[in-house]
Amino acid sequence: MFLDLLLRQPCYVLPAFLYLCYLLAMQNIKDFTLKEIEQWLVSFEEKSYKALQIFAWVFNRGVGSFDEMTDLSKELREKLKETFSISKPKIFAIEKSKDGTKKLLLELEDKNYIECVLIPEEDRLTLCISSQVGCPLDCGFCMTGKSGFVRNLKLSEMADQVFAAQGVLSDNHKITNLVLMGMGEPLLNYEEVIKFLNIAIHQKGLGFAPRRVTVSTSGVAPMIERLGRETKVNLAVSLNAATDEIRNRLMPINKKYPLQILLDACRKYPAVRNRHITFEYIMMQDVNDSIKDAERLVELLKGIRCKINLIPFNPFPISEFKRPPEKTILNFQKVLLDNNYVVIIRASKGQDISAECGQLRGKLQG
Ligand code: SAH
Ligand code: SF4
Image (cartoon, rainbow, N blue to C red; front, top):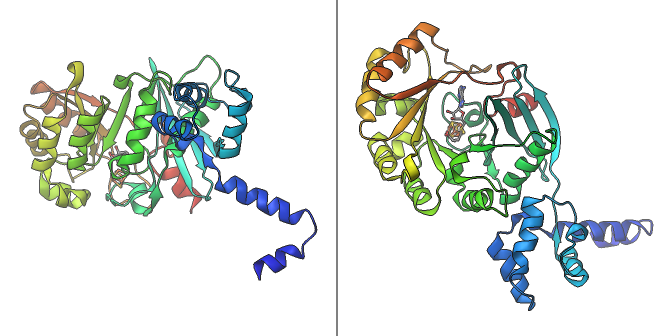
C-alpha cells in the first residue's frame, strides 16, 4: 500500500525517500570506539592501524566529512562514506548568563532535547555534559528528575555536546574540564558512558587529562566500584544528606543503596595520585541545613579523602524547597572546616539563565 502510494508520486520522491532511508541506515562513526573501528577495518582486510587515523580525524580534529581524512586512500574514504555518517550537533538555543555561563540546548535526531553548560572559572572552562534524556531517579530537588526519563544518550550524543560547545567558543578559548553532571544519571548508562570517558581521555580522542574529567553520581554503588576499576577519572557523589531518613526522602535511590553501602563503595574508589572524591551537598532550608546535620556529615565521611561542595539550592517554579539564609550556610561550613574538611560553597553559576540541570529543557516543555 505504502509502496503503491510512493510509486505514484513525482519521479524525484522515490529516490529522495530511498536516500533518506540510506542515510538513516548508515551508522554514525562517532558511535564507534577505536576497537570497533579496528574490527570494521579488519572485517574487509584493511590494516587495523588505520583505525587510529580515522579515530583521530573524528574525535580529535572533529572533521565533518570523510574527504577531509587526507592521509587515507581514496578507496578507504569511499568505503567509509558508504558505511558511515558523521553527525553534526544541532544547537536549538543558547542562553548566556551575565557571569559568562552559556547553556546550550541541543536537538537530537529524534527531536529530543538535551542541555550542556559551559562554565568559565578563573583558570578553567568546564563543560557540564548530559548522559540521559531526562532521568529515572526522581530526586525531589531536581528539575530533570521531575520531568521523567526518556532514554539513554549514545556515545555520539555525548561527544557532540563537546563539539557543539567548542564550536560556540572563539579560537583562543578551549574547554579544559568535563563533568558528567548535566541531565541524567551517568552510571545508569554505564556502557555508553565508559566508552565516552575512554574517548574523552584518549590522547588521539578528545584529549583531556583524566584528572580533568569528573563523573557525578547520585549513588549507584555497584557501578561506582566498576568505574573505579575501569577508569582513572574523578568521582563526585551527590550526597545531599547525612542520614538515611533524610536522604530517602530526597533521593529515592538511597532506598536501594543506603548511605553505608554508598560510602563503602566510595572508600574503595581508587584515589589516583592524591585525588579526592567530591561530595556535593545541596543545602535546603530546614531539610538538611542544621548544625546537627553538619556534625553527622563530619562523622559519616571520616576516613574518606574528600572535599565537600556546599551548593545553595537553586529554586525552580514547581520546587518545594528553599535556599537557606547565607548565615546558615556559613555556620554549616564552619563545622566542617573546624573538623579539617576542605569545604567550598559553590554559588550556582548562571542563575539568570536557569542553568541548573534540566531547567532550560523544562522551560522549553512549558
Ligand atoms: N545524576 C547525577 C549527575 C548530575 S545531576 C547526580 O545526581 O549526581 C545534576 C547535578 O545538579 C547534581 O549534582 C545535583 O545535585 C544538582 N542539582 C540538581 N537540581 C539542583 C537544584 N535545584 N539546585 C542545586 N543543584 C541541583
Ligand atoms: Fe537524576 Fe541526578 Fe537529577 Fe537525581 S539529581 S534526578 S540522579 S539528574
